[in-house]
Image (cartoon, rainbow, N blue to C red; front, side, top):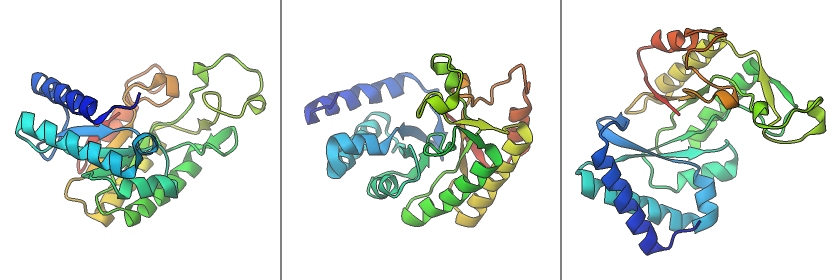
Length: 234
């Protein structure tokens, strides 16, 4: 549903009041965190200028109600040039992505360590194109096939949720991904050192750091080892 300006204003007012009533929200540098997912989808509905105006209105309404300037993080669904161009024109305090691990145009089975290298290179490419910090996103894995009906051959389908399936994910490889995120923050030197983790409990996407039967709490232990970052979960 596309909101008219007056509807958006009322929606943001109600949204801000809910923030006041719930002080358990995440913060960055003491500012309430608001994540907007996904920027290109909203841009397609409202246009670049329209979306920028809506985000400025969101910031103003929340700041007016809380007395604190919120920290706006825009999320991208991928690292395509068109998505980065949208992000570069938004009044955000930082940019990150949702998952970003799978190669949606690639083969049905993909290897975690190979995608890790691609995503790390993508972080640097995105950062070069935007003027605000890019928060690296470290993904546990990806397998959303359980969301679809059973099939006997992945080659018979071409899209989500059956493919791709990422193999080779484990706590040690996840730890390597976290190390790359720390190195990225060292290289780019943002004012806040945030890393997004995908995800806390996305079991239906095969991406969860929450303790489970296979790896127990080993993913959380990898996060605990790295104390120079602020970890945010999706």
